[in-house]
Length: 178
Image (cartoon, rainbow, N blue to C red):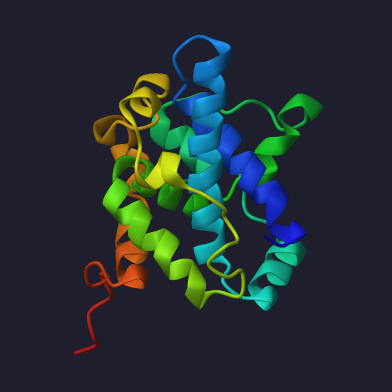
C-alpha cells in the first residue's frame, strides 16, 4: 500500500473504532483493530485505485470526519486541539465503504478480489480473513463494529457507489435530462 494512503487508512480505522468501540479487553481491542484496519485498507485501495489518485489525495486532503460525526450524532471535537488533528485525515467515503465491508463478509470478499484491478495489487492487504471470513470470536470482539444495523447510517452514505464499483448492483445515477 502506498504511503500516501497510510494516514487515511489509520485515521479511518481509528474513527470506526471510536464510533463503534470493541468489547473490553486487550485481545478484543487487537481483533477489532485488525478488522477495522483491513476494511479501511481495502476501502482506501478501491477509492484511490491508481498512483495518481493517491497523489491527488495527498495534495487535496481527504475531507475530515465532520459529516460522519454528524450522522452518528457525536459532537465533533474542536479541530484546534492537536489531540483531534487525526480527524482531518478521515475520508468519509473510505469509512462508509469500510462500514459496508464490515457489515457484509461476502461483499468484503468481493472487494478484496477486486483489488487485483488496482495498482495496489491483490496482495496489498495481506490476509484479510478476519474481514472476509470472520469467526465467532471476531464478532464477539467487535459486536458494534460488525453489526449491520449500527453501521447502517454510515454504510448508507456511499453504499450504492461501492456496489456499482464492484458490480454487485447497479449504481444509482442522476436521471438523464429530459
